[in-house]
Amino acid sequence: MSHQRVAILISGGGSNMASLIDSMSGDHPARACLVLSNNPQAGGLQKASERGVPTVAIDHREFGRDRAAFDAEMLKTLLDAQPDILCLAGFMRVLTEDFVNHWQGRMLNIHPSLLPKYKGLNTHARAIEAGDAEHGCTVHEVTFALDDGPILGQARVDVRAGDTPEALAARVLKQEHKLYPAVLRRFCMGNKDPVLLP
Image (cartoon, rainbow, N blue to C red; front, side, top):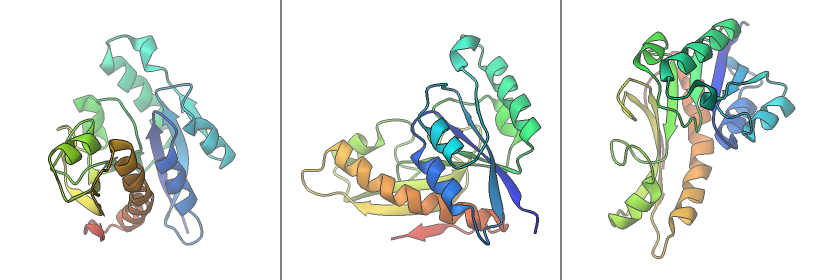
């Protein structure tokens, strides 16, 4: 059986990346072919290496404000690895339109809110401040609009009295680690029906 090839983009510790790689075993239709980071110090690079997945770091700071040049360098590296699907897992760079268009329909992202609520940053604090009863995470296809694109899955958590953003984030992260692998598996089989976890 030939597996689909998945490249994962990270900027930090890579806990979602690790859960994705760990899920791609046995009868899973995909395997990780590369982990790429814009941060050479990203803790996730070691986690990927320990799992036997090739890693590349391309320091975005070396490109100054030239996002197009950075994205072009990423694209070159990715094309060498020949992935079928890209997964953004805590990748903290805004991508250029050319890059997004190249992977349209083949690039997934996980976002820590129940989209379309709370695009962008500080989602947990914003949910608490708004008095929301529930919060969660979303996996979606990436389009050029920030945190937009067709929703492929959501998982919900209750917001508790006295929650801090950190406590809420930790509970959401546990759900992220379940949701992202479930969506990826389904997506690899050509199924874009949303995965809904309670």
